[in-house]
Amino acid sequence: MTAMATSRTDSALVPAPRLVRVFLHFFCFVLAGYAVFGKDFAYLGFPPLYIGEMALVLGAAVALIAGNLTSAILNLPGLALALLMIWTAHRTIPYWSQYGLDAPRDAMIVFYGLFAYVIASLVLQRPSTFLFLVERYKRFISYAIFLAPIVVALGAAFPPLLGIGPHAADLACHLTAIFALALIGFVRLRPLAFLLILLFELFAFTQAREAMIVFVVGCSLAIAFSPGDGALRRILACVGVCVTVGGILFVVDFRFDSEDLRRPVSARQYVENVTSIFTGGDNEDETREWRLNWWTDITNYTLHGPYFWTGKGFGPNLADTDGYQTSGPDEAPLRSPHNAHMTILARGGVPEFVLWISALGAWFGAMTRQLMEARRLRDDWWASVFAFLLIYWTAILVASSFSVMLEGPVVGIWFWTIHGVGLAGLILHRHRVASLQDRRLAAHVPFAG
Picture 1: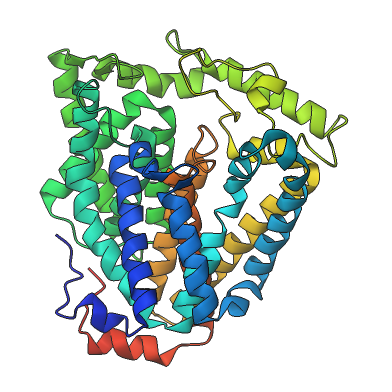
Picture 2: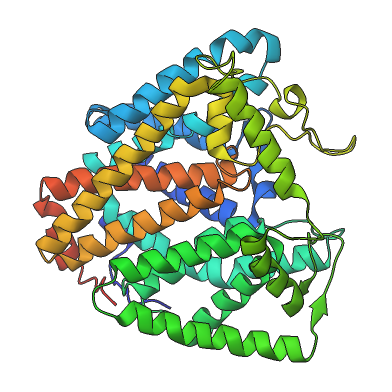
């Protein structure tokens, strides 16, 4: 499936205490479950302790035992995240008695960042863990490409029977990252894998415009980060395939509809979604105006209103307090304004928003600088790692600007895990960790495609 074949076992790559190994295997299983099965997988457990919270508790215990948490925190991106968490706790604790578990649940948009510290500390304690995570992600690629779209298709075709699977926009983030990983030459995908990714992306484009935007952003970054013009040639070839497939579907007037789908799957729907991005016209979806009005209200009562310093806190239902509730009596109530940044501003005020931008900006800036440093040193492996993490992280962040993603564990834990892997990678590369380089060479792992 990929060019990252290795004869070494995962255990050989991670000479760690048993508890650390158990956590890493369990956590990789959790991440794969979120990506393949979506929110239904997230409900595994015993309320309010679901599988994501179990992973966090176990991870925190393992990180405290293993040590190196201070190394994960005492750097610019780590400190910026810590300050964000402190202010978030300040805006959460006062609402706990009134709103109960809704308060910490809303605050998890930030406190899932604890996974970043957990993963970073374990990698820094044993740099070989970095290679373990790379190997495990390599295995995940096949499941993401072949299994997850099947689950989505079955859930759409037979919702009463299954009703499982990730949201199209969520899976589009993962497949876009894998697609970009192949474009920059870090893995080699077979033509069938490329075709399946493109077919799912075409499906996702009809269901969520953010999937289309994420794919364009991911491919653009892959072209920018890829040495030479290899990525551009691959993109042009894929565009040709998409145009051909789209043309055939348009000619035969293909159309598939289901009650579980937001919009019908058809070439005409794809064209309408593309044009609506630029023209703003969409006869079937009026959520654009609804979102913009809500975001404008949030900006007014924070930047120009009484909630400048405090926000409305973590606990209240923003859709109810702001007058934008759209959920029916038999549905779970909407709580967030379909934009992670607006959620942060509304709940924590301008100080929280500044700390949020600072935490994200510190990580992005440090990763970009280290990518350029790897390029200067002609270390193609590290340059590809940093490029991939940047693309993955950015894809999720862009998607979260149009839908509720970081607020939940399905994508939120993935996002902060990538954040943590990048945090550890920054430190390892800055200190030129010889042991990691030696293990990579000793294992004969051809990471470059």
